[in-house]
Length: 179
Image (cartoon, rainbow, N blue to C red; front, side, top):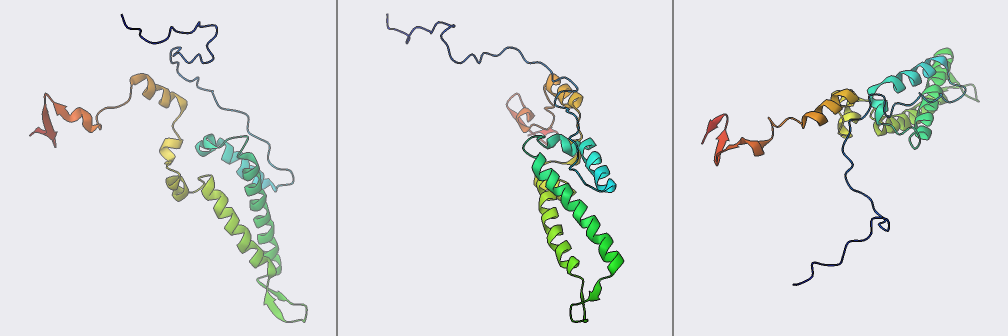
């Protein structure tokens, strides 16, 4: 009788123990951590935006460790923009230059550069409808709670829209009628 390969290793000597242990539903509060503290020195309005972000469904997609520095930078930029806007409102769009001539407020150029970086960070974190679409996330998907995801998992999914199930006894179904 021919051999069927080497004898299996002793379970105690195995390095990988990746046998299926049985699947369990994810607890409702799994993955929900405390909201990180906002960066120091932000205006109250920006701190409120920080809190609102962490309460939003989109924040569930952010990694609270690796994404946090970029998110803090984004909210510091928001703070810088608000302070710059307030200064421009107070000084005006046109100010006196060093030779007493009227020139465009230099803060406007600064604000333009900051807004460009803000847009890039907002796109990275899906903070606009278009950015969410480019990331492949719709607001409805981001808003799904863990209980919704668990119920889909436990139910086995919805096969109504799967074309592989449109074949009945070897016949193709086209628009609800057998061909």
